[in-house]
Structure formats: C-alpha cells, structure tokens
Length: 307
Image (cartoon, rainbow, N blue to C red; front, side, top):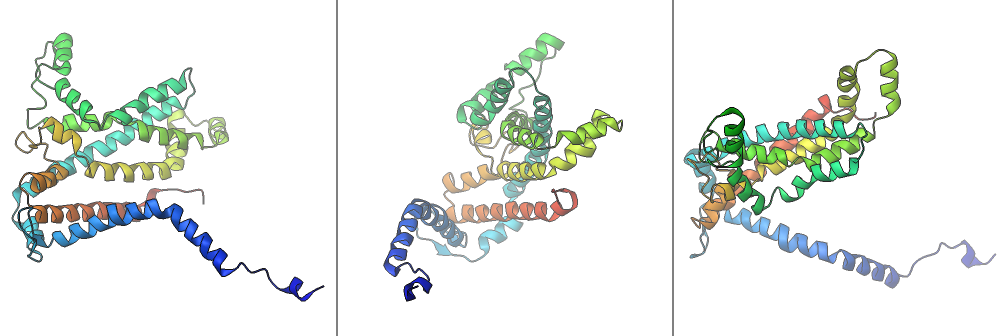
C-alpha cells in the first residue's frame, strides 16, 4: 500500500471555491431580490418612520414623534384599528369553520370529487382581484342580487349593504369567508393523514360520528388548524384590495371599512406623509408579530402532534 492510499482525499481549494461561487450564482436571484426589494426598503422605511418626509422635501428627523402621534393623537388610527380587529376576529374563525366543514364533506368520498375541489378552490384564486371586489360591490348594492333575492323570497326590501355603516364591514367579511378554498385544501390533506383504523376502533366501541369528530378528528387536526389560523390571521391584517375598491379608496361610509392598510395607503399616497405612513407600517409589523408570537406560545396548550 502506498503512502497516498492512507491519506484522505482532499478537494483542491480552487475547486471548492468554484463550487461555492456556482452555488451563490444560483442563489443570486433570490439574494438580490431579498436585499434590494425586501431588506433594503424595509430598513429605509424604518429610518423614514422617525422622520417628517414627503416627496417634496428631504426627510427631517423628528425622533419618536410619529409614534407618539399614533399612540395619543390620531382618531383615524383608532378607527382603523377597530375596523381591522373586527374584520380579523370575524373573518378568520368563520373562514376556518367553513373550510373545515367543506373539507370534512369532501373527505367522505364522492363522485366527481376533483371537480368539487376545483370549484371550491376557485374563489381563492380570483377572490382577491379588483374585478371580484367590483362585482361584490354590485351584489350588495341597493339594487343588487342580495336585495333582489330577499324581495323575491320574503318581500323584504333590503338596504344598500355597502353604503350602510352598520353593515358595510360584514360584506367584506363575507367576501373573505367566500375565499376559503386554500384552507379547505390544506384541511383535506390533513384529514387524509388520519389513520382510518382509529375511526374503525371507535365505531366498534360505540362512538357516534359526532364523538369521533371531537375526540379523534379535531385533536389530530390541530396542527393543521394552527397553521391555517396563523396564515389567515396574517392575511386578514394585510387585507387591502376589497376595502379600497368597495369604498372607492375612502374607507367609507364614515370610516366603517377603513382597514389599517387602507389608512396607511391614504397617509402615504393621498396626504404624502411618508414618514408617518412608515411608522404606521412598523406598528402593523409589531401587531402581526405579537399575534403570531401569542399563537405559538398558546400552541403548546391545544396543538397535539404525534409525540
């Protein structure tokens, strides 16, 4: 045996360097996008949040004045928070329940299952578009389809649901719940992972379908419920297009559809208060991060994994 046989094989330095360069070359589109389009603008907005800035002048450092105004002297901020939290607290649970109910029905096994899944998933693909928001505004108008159905079936002349401050937010909640397809597909995948022998054993022991659902299906599905809840909550806080289109960008009537993101947009691109809008954006980041952290902290009490 030669001396070289006992020596470990070593890749030349230039060869390792070439592989690393090639790897970073393949990663470069993502790295450029992250630093140029994500991290860079985020850091710029963080700086601008401590300034008084419009497009017509240079940023002027004001310290925490923007955040102080948000906390103490901005009634529209409080109105936007109230509307947004109402939307989140209503749309997320309803969307979860509706998506889970449809997923349970589709999991039973039926003819044309693929077609039903495609039909139910379709609103998630088109529901966030401007065209659907315009259509939704027509559906809930005073002479829209909803009022026509109410008049035909019950002889009830409904109001203009969009123009009524007490009902406008609920039309947006209905639009959000209608887009349940993505959550439904994820629930359906989770249901397919539950062992069928557990249901068979429960049936032999005399457990009803309802008891099986609450004692087997829901506990084993809690990781999927947790995932969907976190994603839907984040998406609900970021909702913008429906409120913008339905209210013509005003958040009306009487700020009843003034989502937080819509108020941020108005401050930035209507009032040209980019420094204040940047502060609003970072407050929203803190709110979403706080809700996400609370979700993960509470998960250990109700989310059940295999172990």
